[in-house]
Length: 278
Image 1 (cartoon, rainbow, N blue to C red):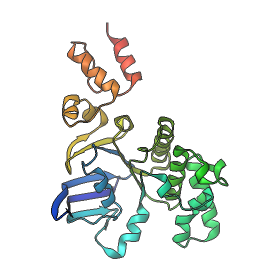
Image 2: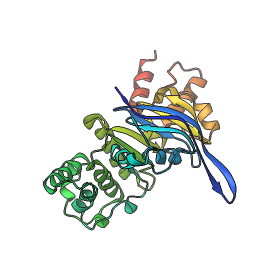
Image 3: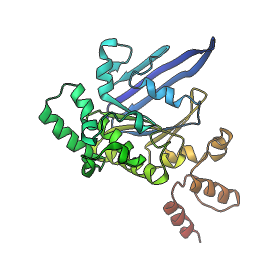
Image 4: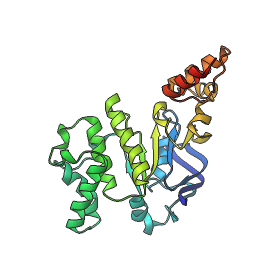
């Protein structure tokens, strides 16, 4: 597996009312091709600022961001970087540009100057991949939040990115919309081998990731598998972060002297472990 994204000593600062704000402090990370990485942290932790560096929306104050061998600082490569790393934002209404679903999904490929028969094929594939093909002739404003976000994802998928960066894509959705979107990005990762970097403040969305990265105050402070990260319940709580409810329960049971692992993440795992207790 090759490297999809590498950041080396990434620093970012900006001015706010004449005050210098250091938003990212020395962030060095690697994301492999095909990996599903979730970045968590509460508002102001730097996770969205970090995301915007990964497809050259922001430029490092110092350090480097390398996307599939391309440095985002290379002005001639910005469009290439954005085709490799497609970005999905929080509010689908800000991303949807057309009045008919299939025209919206075609918008990106059209701007790339792709021939029209190829666009038709890409639109169909992209809508299939987010399970929205039946809605191709509908008006986006008639769709639910979860459906709109899946259309926004299809619009990025039609550009054939190798990596999908999702910046809190479920923040504005209800629970069923959130589930639709999470299932969609999991499927794109597993079946189409698209690298996923998913930024969220919902802990439950991180349970199935290959790796979880916790950011606080512009720094990476924890990194590991979901089990490794979420079993550090007290540390996460001291940062004001929740842990998945099942992990919290496991932690409480362990404190009561019950012999179960600390890295239980799902109800099914919990049931298995409790049933094994004699």
